Image (cartoon, rainbow, N blue to C red; front, side):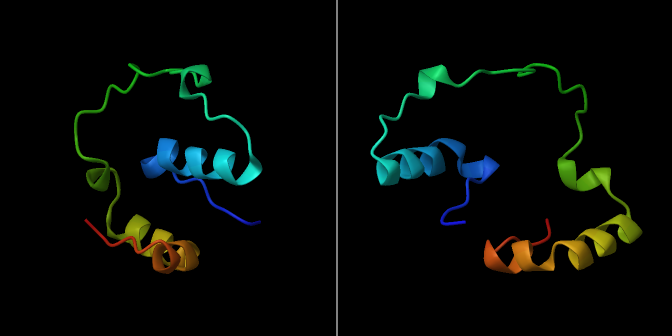
Length: 72
């Protein structure tokens, strides 16, 4: 794997991959599937209790460190 495409930087990361591959970047070709279907109003950090957060921290420790994520 040479690159990562992160959801929070989707367009920027896709543009970098396209540039690397020599492929035109065409964001208009990306769909907006289920764009208005989120019915939850709370912040995503409120989805998880302490046990869930600890499990996520354990299971995804490499990603959290590599991408500089921090708890909200």
